[in-house]
Image 1 (cartoon, rainbow, N blue to C red):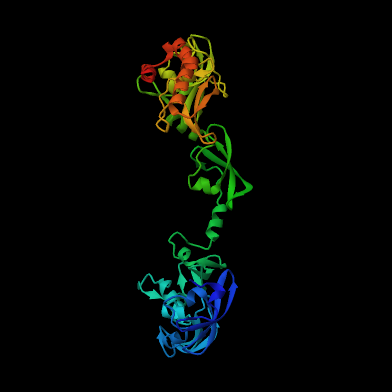
Image 2: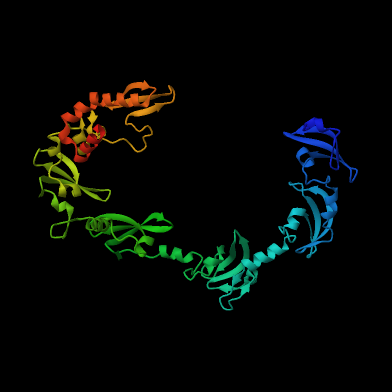
Length: 443
């Protein structure tokens, strides 16, 4: 018989005599008497019955004694009564630099802590120290205080967020500010920002930048750059920042961009020559007379007048080149189906008749079909096979059957009643492949 919980009180397990029992935080605890050290201690039940547990911890005390041992720069002095979160013993240690530090046993043995912190600071200075351009040697960044680099005098240093900062005095404008060391040694950097202000003082009146001529400065600013009133060669006016003018970011009021856009997306004539699509307005292509043009989503669209039926609509240029009608030739032998956007879907118009899609009726059974018969599925609620059929947008239940063959036979009768008359009436609209599928279903 296996004893559990309170039943073990008074019994002896290995070197432990169980004196009491309690349950806390959904775990069982025993008050045990250790025969090795004559001590009493509360221990978890799973630890007590574990075959590897040989003592209450008294035997491990001599084994885990770290006194006078050295770990990196730390020498262990004595054990304290404090414990870490994982119940690891905290030891008092003395660093080689003279400072003392409390470190847990696990951190010492696993080399997580090797000093009081002085070793980390030394490695930090070594890792992120600067390189002198002349000697190409590692130097302490604080030794550069007082030096002059280009137009900056270094007055102070600090290290924040893994970057060196220097408090500098600009020799151009005598301004003092904190700057990154990488910004100071950058070849492009010539001043603390004072030279950028000098750009705003440049008079651009009368100067020409591409198609723009600067007339006068305004009180507006764009990224601290003066905004100028400019006139384009096409007659348009535009306000542009001095930065965009001097660096060549803006060269016109927008007309140059539109011309380039038309050139890139213009149509090709039969002679493979680029022509402006707007020049085709009024022309006749196939059976379409072009009335208007627009460019949307990188595609040319024309508003056309169909010469066959007189219908007017927007069509893509790529469709106009290969089409013979606006869709009226297809719609002569098919019902017209209007979609939400007002456009006519010719594929649907061909197969959708009397509220039924002929292409769906002529489909084979799907590969995902698990019953092996088209229109037959298992009803979990009734625990029977269900025969269903779709017709004119409605789902018709033909019945529920215990035998799957009876359900398949009911589906066949439903196809003859609903689908067969419709397919025979509009047989001329089906493709040869769809006709083959129907012959296969009959076989």
